[in-house]
Amino acid sequence: WRVYAPATSAAVSCDRAVLLRSSFATAPYSMWNVYASSVSALAGRSVLMAHLRPVSSSRIAMSGVSAPTQSYEKLKALLREVDALSEIQGILGYDEQVFMPPGAAASRAKQKGALAKILHDKSTGTEMREAIDGVRGREEDFDDVRVRANIRDAVDAFDKEARKSSELAQKEAQLESEANQAWAAARKASDFSLFAGKLTEIFELKKEVAAVTRPALKSEPYDGALDAFERGMRAERLDEIFEELRAGLVPLLEAINAKKASDPSVDAPHPSLAFGDQWDTEAQAALSRDVAAKMGYSFDNGRLDVSTHPFTIIN
Image 1 (cartoon, rainbow, N blue to C red):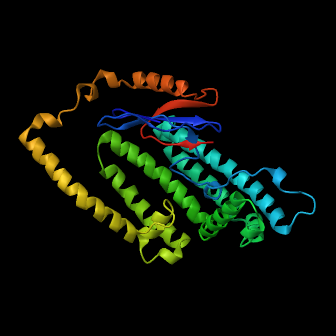
Image 2 (image 1 turned 90 degrees about the vertical axis):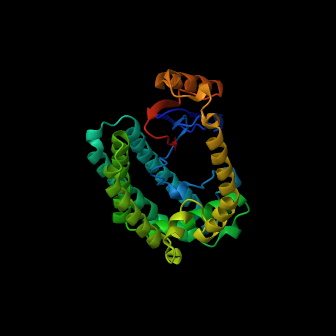
Image 3 (image 1 turned 180 degrees about the vertical axis):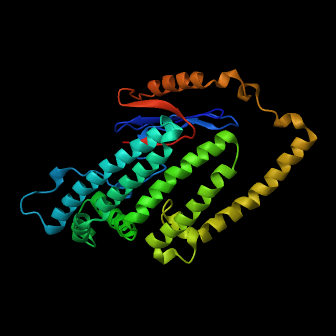
């Protein structure tokens, strides 16, 4: 659920609460969002839990269980532990973007890096590998399609994460935190040079991570990075999509610009969308809390805070 307004954004943390997101209003300004909380959108560390769906234990007979079933039960338990660690990481990220003073940035980056190393070791250690190997290729042993999906995605995520060293995982988390702080400082000062160095480091590191975790895609560096967000998508296909969009959008943009040139008044914002006191941060917060409450959001389980940039955390 989003409210668009100038130069502010909001973040919500919650305990297993979900807000249905829908467009509330629009204006040509930065976003001010109300979101249910999640493992940090910046971090996204809980890769092995991303597609885990709970399955009733009553569906599985616990007496005389098969080896794959035992491995699957063990896998679920381990993934829940990984998810708990990911939630802690999400809380660190939430605090970093909402409450943490700038002077604590270096310490927070080290904290997130250290936790990422622990999380990686837990996600790819001996116990997890044994559980994964116990279900690998055994999807057809389970009737429940959700279990099959869990196994498929858990194995895929494990194989990719296991190719990454714990040192690389630590470096990635620490640099992401450092880069986020540099971006915030650059935004506040309106000085891109404050962020440029960290952005270059991020690009180089992400290319390395993509090549390590998805070696089959390393001939096109962007394919590996893209696959992390849109599994199966390739740069070649994106080129096709953008080419089709370009064919329709360029003439439309030219027509709009021609209209604006002949009648500048058409480009003026509607009075209700013009910048002014009506976009006061506290007024937006009050409105957002009111709307969220009417949608059924429980502030006993979550909260709304203002942040520099919108993000999503669900614990």
